[in-house]
Image 1 (tube, rainbow, N blue to C red):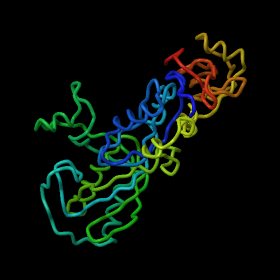
Image 2 (image 1 turned 180 degrees about the vertical axis):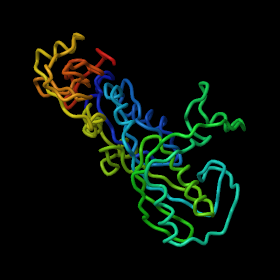
Image 3 (image 1 turned 45 degrees about the vertical axis):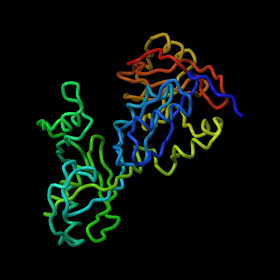
Image 4 (image 1 turned 120 degrees about the vertical axis):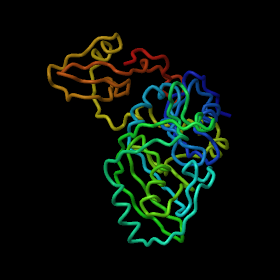
Length: 316
């Protein structure tokens, strides 16, 4: 049996295929326990009704999760036309039922209206906090609060199937998009109402469900095989350009100093790599000056295949 790693040295990104019935936090807790990780966190909540890709950061990787939170997401959504529920999904009570007499051309025409920049009002059954409490807590207490609309972007909507009263869509959208609200709005535009009956997250930024692993599969693996499923620390920041620095500059950055490139570096956020080609954090270049925004400690491997990183040095 492979040696169980110390809690402080399990660092990396796990692409988990979350099953229906679990909250995102429950899924994170199970993954954390399986890897015996010191800390863990996800990069975007999936409701218990939903399944699919839930990227999880373990150890040092949790410090870079914010860079995936802003990424676009891809979903497979099933809408049941003709029925409106209190929550916008199958877990709510039925509010109304209407006959469905729409055609595929009509659906196609309506969906075009939902592609592009939109204003969307968050649902009451959401995790957004107001006065320190999530909206769903108010909803469960029978309260309805006024919610400000938020700007979202629907990049694309594809019709995968339309059978009887079930409309299956693939949606590419910006962060902050509530697919259950989109389902309700599409149903209203069709004149028959709708609610969400199934939702699968298929992708987040460059990460894809096809590369994920289930909890059941992880439970059947040895610790060594689980560790092989972890992606590098920089995975969450893969969308940022790479900036290599010299060994001297790396030492300066870790000591809290800025690095002057003399105008020779591209401005903006970047992934930082030292002289040995090892990722060590996120920096930002402005007017030729590189400033650290988020760093890990210097590499000190203790487990094969692991970075062995711990304790933040600089947080931006």
